Length: 175
Image 1 (spheres, helix red, strand yellow):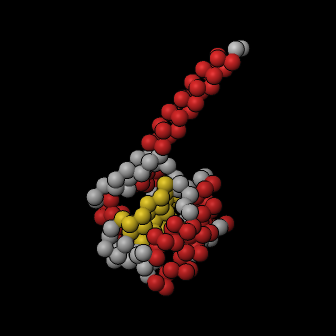
Image 2 (cartoon, helix red, strand yellow):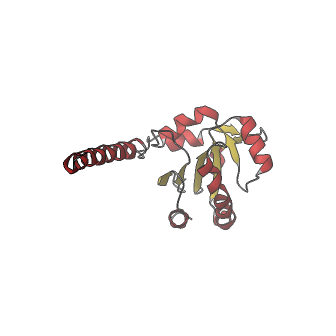
Image 3 (tube, helix red, strand yellow):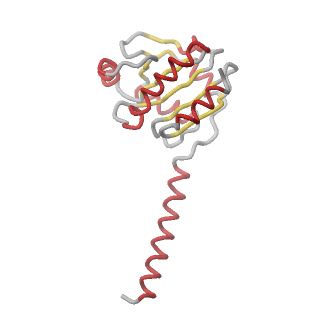
């Protein structure tokens, strides 16, 4: 193949690669949250890993970090020990952390038995995908974290595995 042909093929591949990257960034970008998303969240009562009902309204007026996750999601499971560390560090300052599983009750119960966390793990099942979308995660991808301040305002959101320093900074701004 001639040099000119290789250059043309390379330019074409680069163009398609750039287009694919742009499309991927648009698909997994976080859009604006629905104005009623926080009220919807606080209106929920979900079972925990043991099957007991937990009303999320109990955390209204407290800083709340909501982490949407699933047992089958490696980055979700990777970040959970760090969330437990944040829970231990910032709970005395009023922060509450809750994990909302987009997974089956059986999977979450089994996971919780093997890998206990210091914060509650609740079960939303597949219906939790709608809540994730209401918070602006239109792709429904996991993990997805949302930080809500004492006044019920969304102050930080992260689609994908969070960066510890960025989450710490966001938490310090609300506690």
